[in-house]
Length: 237
View (tube, rainbow, N blue to C red):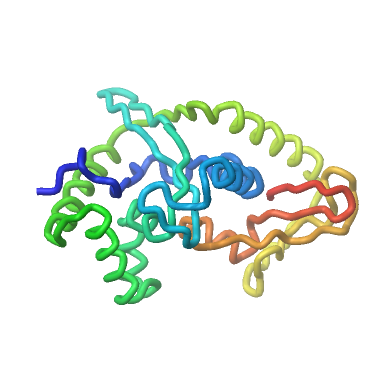
């Protein structure tokens, strides 16, 4: 049996009521990328789990304090992890993408090998561990949760205030509701909310770091980030 205390790489399934409540969502793309780049600069450009330098992502590590009434999800830290370790951490989503044909069998098998190598275990250990993780996820998903952003609370509050200010200044913008031919940036506001300039440039994002819902919104142009070439202001919508 694979003991969690000995594991370097773990499956970390988010309880269903907490879907869409990540730090990445709370901060927005620009602030999230700034945080991720700062962590890489501070701690080195390598995965904190396996040491890889390939495609580094920011990964949120949560602690779950379960109670009968309202439980608390505490954000403990943001780790820099490689794409392989990140796909393992969110193995339920990875499995769903595999079943939908968005991840091929070669990639799926490579990820399972990666887990076995990092944790020095057998495939049966991984399979049993995933089943246990699903049981824990199912139990936690039936509870009511509140979020404690921990050390990131000031950053979340600052982002929320900035977003509210932007929505106030851009309330008169008209958004096209035709999503059929939409692409990233399709619904980008026509003017900078800071200086009013129309010299805006779309900030390209990496869909591999997004949830399915985030990727759908980005692909349709419903959400995104832009950079004002006139004043240097970066903002999300």
